[in-house]
Length: 112
Length: 117
Image 1 (cartoon, each protein chain N blue to C red):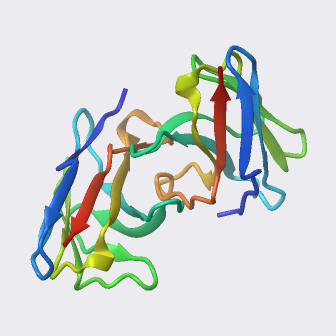
Image 2 (cartoon, rainbow over the protein chains, first blue to last red; image 1 turned 180 degrees about the vertical axis):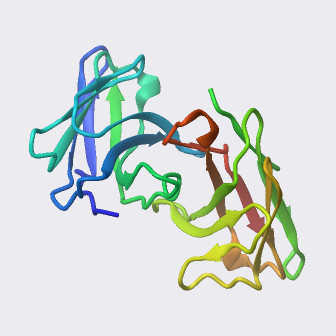
Image 3 (cartoon, rainbow over the protein chains, first blue to last red; image 1 turned 45 degrees about the horizontal axis):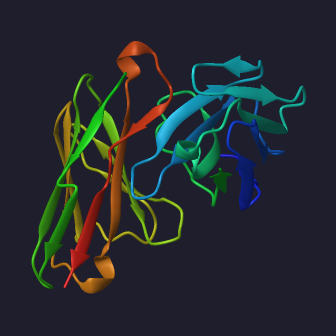
C-alpha cells in the first residue's frame, strides 16, 4: 500500500470548517483513499473514501487532486466531538481492504 | 451500517495467564477479519489477518504461538493472548469488511484494553 503523509496536529475553532490534508504521491491507479478517525480510547471510525472524484456524505467531504497525489478531508462545521486522530489510508478496494496500514495521523483539536 | 463488536471492552489479568478476546460482526458475514494492537500515543499496528476456516496470517515479528487466532465462523474471530506478560498490555482492535454488500471500507470494533499485572 502506498505511504501517506499527514501533519501531526491541527487546531480548529468550533463551528468552522476543518481541512485536513494528506499527501499520497506514490498512490497506484487501483488504490482508493480512505479516511478514518479515532476518538480517544475507541476503535477507528470510517468517515469517507474515494478513488478520483470528490465525495461527500453526511460526515464530511473528500477532495482529491486531479493527479491523485494528495487529498483533503473537510469537516464543514467542526464540533468539539470531532476532536480525534484522523488517519488517511490508501489501499486497493479489493479483498485486501480492511487490512489497513495506519500512519501516525493528524490529531485534530476543536476548540470552543 | 455494519457493526463490529468486541468483548470484553477491558480486562485485567495476572502475568502468565491467557486471555481471550472476541470479535463479532453483528449484521454481516466476514470471511476475513484483522487484528491490530495499539500502544499508548502510537498508531495502530496490524498483527494478523484472520481467515474463516483456515490459518491466520501473521505480520512479521508477531509470534503466532503467543497470539492465537481462531476464525471458526463467518461472524466470529477470537484472539487469545497466551502466557500474558506486562509488555502485552495494550489496546487490541479488530476490523472487518462487509464484502457481501460490495462495501470496501473497514469497520472496527470498539477495542479491548488489556492490562497484565
